[in-house]
Length: 359
Image 1 (cartoon, rainbow, N blue to C red):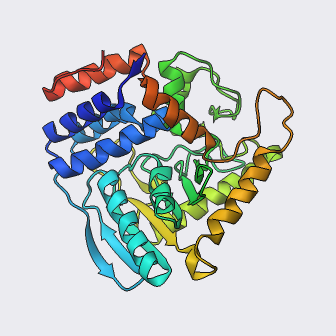
Image 2: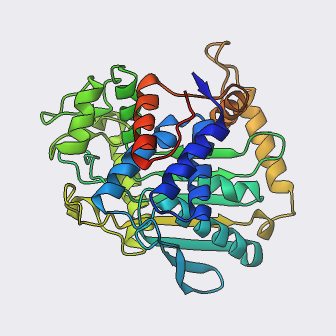
């Protein structure tokens, strides 16, 4: 079914405020979740409320926390998220990075002591909306990614997002996990009772797992087996995904002192997630005539769109096209939510004591 975005936004905001979040921080978080759903990234939208409810009940989250700048110069800043949800801290940090880049050509902001912040691409595209290049990386809370040549999960999904402003095309927007697939994508397959493609998740013997529910258990509970690095197998260059994952961790967490996920007790509710994020904004006008960057990017995107496809029914796309298409469709027809997602969201609403108006 298609649920209007405003109803989802209201539910998310009401649940978060019922948990103790300030109105403005809850509104920011709800906006990020809903925009992600509209962009077609169901794994990182409102379905995350179920995960955040668990973190809240475990006492891992300080929902009263506000992000604050603790170190700053003209082009850089360090922000303390105070163990709060990462969405307000991420939005605050990228706005700060963009403002610094507007004045000094580049802005780099690191966020420490954070939690999950949703889809990294949301923050990268914030820069593109203002005519700047944006890059975002992050660590994550769960050690679920196995290094190439191993089956012991040591790394998180460690996303990388990159956005660049175009004029007549959708912004170039690359948003990717450095594992073959994000952990929450496996959750979506479990909700929809679909078998996993081979190569997403390995078991303790290094064999592909097709059952989504079993894969969920391995990712969330087991100390052996997990998500493969981007590429899937050594023969398909999974060492590149492994390397990119470490790069994202170095920028996202090592830079600000965030914890390496394998060193965290995954089942200890008292153990803070201590996730780190990295935000970079770069002004193309520092390097060339204003507007010429977007024009040249449009020309490159047009050439890619005009590339003859293998299948005429599936034209060549550029990163950012799927999100733009999904946003147009879902704004008109609503966000599709599975019966299982609706059931779980109803439970979250009832436990929070707020109205449920998605059915």
